[in-house]
Amino acid sequence: MPSAHFPDLKDSAVLITGGSSGIGAALVEGFLKQGARVAFLDIDRKAGNALVGRLSQETETAPVFIPADLRDVEALHRAVEQAAAAIGPIGVLINNAARDDRNLLEEVTQETWDESQAVNLRPHFFMAQAVAPYMRTLGKGSIINFSSIAFMLNMGDLPVYATAKAGIIGLTKSLAGHLGPANIRVNAVLPGMVVTERQKQLWLTEESIKAMIEKQCLKRTLLADDMVGPCLYLASDCSAGVTAQTMIVDGGVF
Image (cartoon, rainbow, N blue to C red; front, side):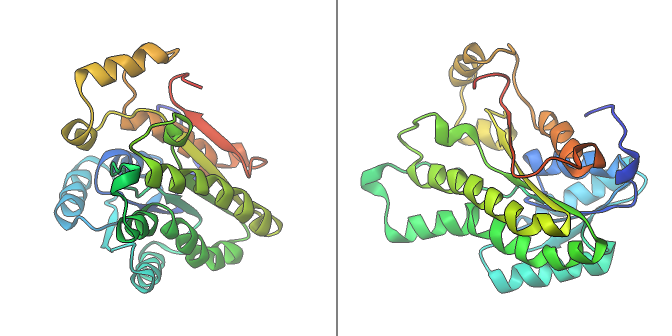
């Protein structure tokens, strides 16, 4: 977890999607340790409640967990309203939630295509739509969209997921253009191979992790905590002049 302190983040209202585990859980903890008021959305109630229980013992304030299915746009908007009621007008939004299912060209159906976009791309737009009025009221804001380097790796089993992650770059730049006059910044973070428990259970092997490390300039495993510092920077006034940008955090693959 980063040791740097960002005083302007104290008491800021931060909303994180997919916050129950992995990168999202690390972000929830990281912002709490900066003194921010944090709410997070996730479909996994068990993991979300467990995270609240752990952090309530380890941090000065506990996060607010709001169960939500981001595929349901109306439920998404209601969850944002609940979050704002609990922690105040949202000044930082981190669109982290994702699901990196593998699909081959021949296997993809209309249903699997739509399901992936409903999880990996569509919520980024509608979350931004829902929080923008709060940020306009505050006179500033920071939206951080999680993309991935996956769409740059020519991975043959990720056509649907890669499409969504590439689309997030275009969405980020368009939102930055629209919201910039309101002093709302929009940037994207592109993680490399971040080794989480879910990734190890589903996709990663010792051999695949070793192969990626060989491609990296930094010869170590990337962990969820490695994504916290970049997000703290993009959320804080330290990046007050930074918008419409993509930050690759992959240990030096690209």
